[in-house]
Image (cartoon, rainbow, N blue to C red):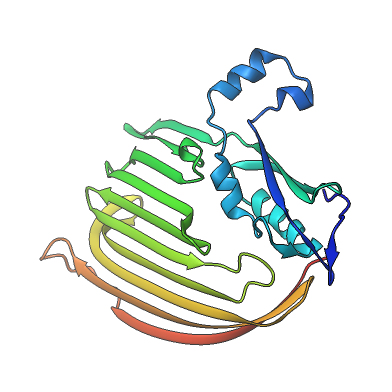
Length: 287
């Protein structure tokens, strides 16, 4: 939603001031909604903080920008799971960028119980996609499956871990038969004309896996797997509605298998140690 633009300079216009208006899940004034139940629901949710909105904009006060950058900033804000509505307009009177956002419900409690054949499995936990209004995604889950394997999982995702649009993701799962760890550090193409990207991810899995035959457990394997990937890319060309990019990447994968019981005669899968690399080219166009 873009308004008329007053000051232009070489196809660009200046933003003298940025004004941010944040709305909770329900905008009672704009949507003319009663306090009950909508206001009560709003009270259970922390509105996204203004600093979170401002840091995700692709411009600052005093910037000369083109119209398409406002559209990209809107798309970027709407891409976050905690923002339902994002609108940016520019006042023709004083070159003020008016940023309006409306939140989504982001708290997700989880509880499930299943039973059958004398076995019970369950899962409980929570996920908050906008922790305390800071835009961080956190969660914890505790589960037990039909094999009586217990898992405790915690994760954290930060879409703005470091200045410059660096993102962080981490997960740790502690199980009574091993553990799983995942880590990711990324700097994506945060806008169409972003000059470069970087992506590093790592996964380590050290668990026991049961082997079944005719629905009966006959053995178990120790599995140790590692995967790491690194990708980097750069812009070859871009304009207001298209971009061409190149990228290079490297992947390393390793797997080692062992027997849980020393006397077990089950055939083991073959260990592997793989390396691969590649290059790519992409052309992107916004309609």
